[in-house]
Image (cartoon, rainbow, N blue to C red; front, side, top):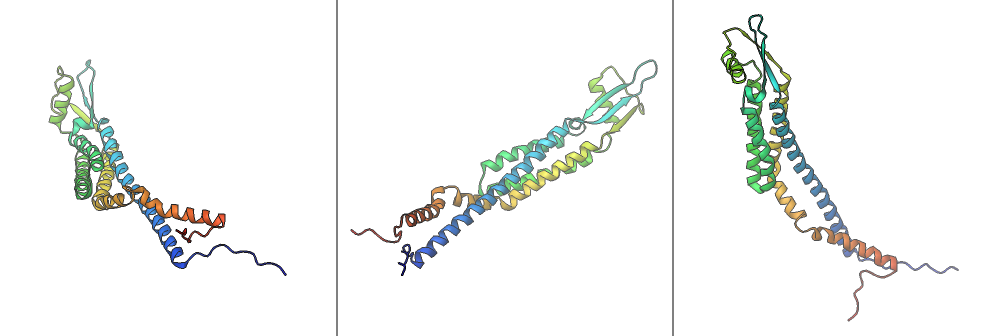
Length: 232
């Protein structure tokens, strides 16, 4: 006849349920915190990439103005950057870049207002990129040539203008990123504040259920009853 193996200490159902609920709350808090961080990072990356991309694109050559001179004089070629064609896209991009800092520095409803402003700036960036896609006017071409070559006169019809459509298209794409980032901040920014306050301000509170679980299983491994109270 074999002896019955001693069983471990029984855990009251109420304590087990409390432990399970605490562990589930901690797990849910971790998942919510990760989701919040992911949304926050995504919004910042969209705004940052869109703003920096628009700034870099604005410094590229969008159009080339060529003044055809009478022989034997050579033709005069002027490379015109996007900023020279229209300064507004670069200005909008700088505001969007400042929006990244503003989002980090604000909380709650103020952050949502900042997000809405960033989204509007992105719409402005798209609009001005589209309007700047066409060739500059003859008078603007003469001004651009004269700014770099004061000795060159540009008679009417003596200049040809070549455009590079890829740069305005890329600026529109950057504007779309800025709009997406701003809209995400406007829609979710206030919620980020509440969740960050709950799960980040007091990390010890979220770790308590995990420490309790670890202590209970350690006690069980030693053969102790974790639910028993020491006698006074």
